[in-house]
Length: 582
Image 1 (tube, one colour):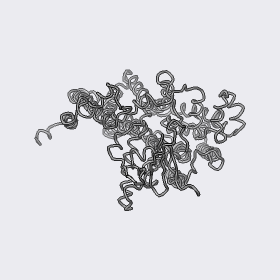
Image 2 (tube, one colour):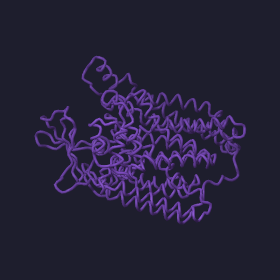
Image 3 (cartoon, one colour):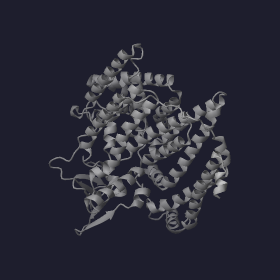
Image 4 (cartoon, one colour):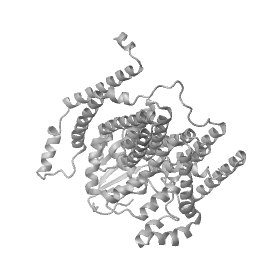
């Protein structure tokens, strides 16, 4: 065996290990299918029969979805992996690129001043985030805390207290309200377990800082990654500016201290972009595998990022296809296109097996519960304004009051938005579109490998808008487009640091770029300051006279206490159809 293996060349060894890994994966799926109940057996069969007969199941339990959809995912994936295994000799040959002696140099060298700028951005990021880690629990955080991460204490009518734990099974597979960010729930469940191990706290107690730690770490990692990515694509000044903007943006601050999946989503948007760029530049398989893993984890953190995955892959795939047709570049573009396809297929296989039960629950819930609404110019302006500035309103609450008054969006902008805060209006309406356009042109004139990824990322909210408008009709809150924010910051940063490009003297150009960047960051801090009433609830702590935070869900009254306990009490006097208030 050893002699046979040692006689193989590099491509032969590659085919051998690919075949071994795929064979092991296929065997594992076949063993699962052999031992697991099919959809026609056990619990699933009984519930399906009840539903067909019009019996009591208004919404089946998570175990029903888990049994059916883990089995279906395994069947689909067994066929896909078998096809990959049988055709591995072909696609590995098609994906082959002649090995080069030396990897191409990627990006500019990192200077000491650039590292100091990064450290400054990280310090500011921590200063603006760490004090918020123990702010009181928010509504969606509470939903996942009790259902997927921690659990709650039930206060029964006879006065007894019954602890109901959120198990690992519910962490991975429960999604009855279509709002379980699974990968975050997994990380937060583990984070709380580590905290209890070292603190000795009882099982029915949680810690807000430990709960939110995965989001904080993902947010700080995003600052580093966006800085590194822009260095790779040769924009040194933009790298430092983007790091500061990522650290100061109200939306990144909010989601970096929120127990949800949005911070992780932004991190994996950046890692997808960086991995794809490095794959194109270095011609290495490892970066395509990293790209597929990043796309998968982005979806696993927030399924709504499907628009980013589709837009990104569409632009990147089309670009590689066009290059493969060109005679000069076909020798590398065709193998890269195959590698991208294989990376996406592997990512889809893993995601399908992990998330199909949760996705099926979400689809059932959204089909009957989610609000229908036409997306119009108001939605576009809200998404644009929040991503550009992190601020929707000149003053708190004005946006929603405007909708109640049924003002036209143009009349609102001219009569209220601009007079209410001229600096904010200038940045949102004039400066940001101009700098975004400059950034796109500058990237297109620079490294062509970055072009399809940036354009694909920018196209993601357009795809979301088109899909909702033409097909689903589902309403989307502006933060549902969070996958757009890191790409916007990249392009915007390139734009603002390129405006001094007409200056030929390099020293003068550097000073003008530095001065312009600092001036903008100061203006940005002014329009987004919490003290000005424009922050997104970032100072929302437990305060005097607030011993707990209370939520109403139907007839259930939920209370979350600062000491890390959560209780539920049934209130039969409550009308379950009454609007939810805090």
